[in-house]
Image 1 (cartoon, rainbow, N blue to C red):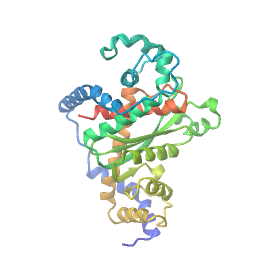
Image 2 (image 1 turned 45 degrees about the vertical axis):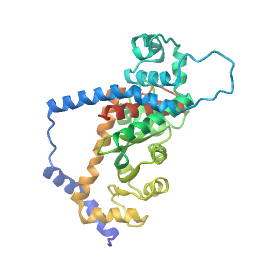
Image 3 (image 1 turned 180 degrees about the horizontal axis):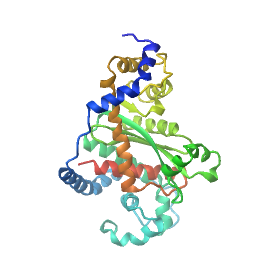
Length: 337
């Protein structure tokens, strides 16, 4: 097994033509809308049927020990806190509106709290632990033990005044860098997610104010914690560098990669990088077939933003992480069936 840098660059030069030919040979399958709607309805029934039992199981293993006994007794127990936060995120209401609407929900009947109580749930460590437990339980219930992953990043607005995609296009992505230099101009957050392309379940998610790359590293750390074995990975061209393969191997371990090399790519680098380039050069169309399964990531983001909105509505970093996790949890719940 041997290739040269020259061979790799020769393929990358004509890659656009190969991609065009590949797309003609593999036309998109048309969706059967009737069966699609039936499957969606069935998934929704399962999601809402399983939600409360899963939250109960996620919370029951957490024992809360309070060192301070002074102050008012909490109005909500842990299970109610988690359910409240999940429901609030799904219906996209403000903290104030949600505090008034509680009487609507039969799960939380006769509970009355202030909007500040709801706001604090985003940074409540017990709630965060329960949300992580819920994430692991959903993956376990779906039977996700080994995953072939796709990975991509997106941005979420932190205010209704600016839309991430619109502003990024308007300023040719310079808004990403400009929003980092001064905390007062922080209006967007980077989010990266790893999705299992077979079950469409999110394995891990990570956020960052600084860059998509840092969000990627945070997602890798969570993926390691879940204990799920990742057999292969398909990442956006922004991550088509040897350093990201090394980051991945240092955190998760050996994985089969499908990345699109840049035009100046070389064969120097980790062994997995060399093996990836060999597959890319020797059978480019078969390689592209594997790589384009990463589209599940892009469709997942579109689905999430339709369901939970394109803004997270939080400003503190710890609360932004919680809001992003809630979006990921609802995605997985909807695909549990």
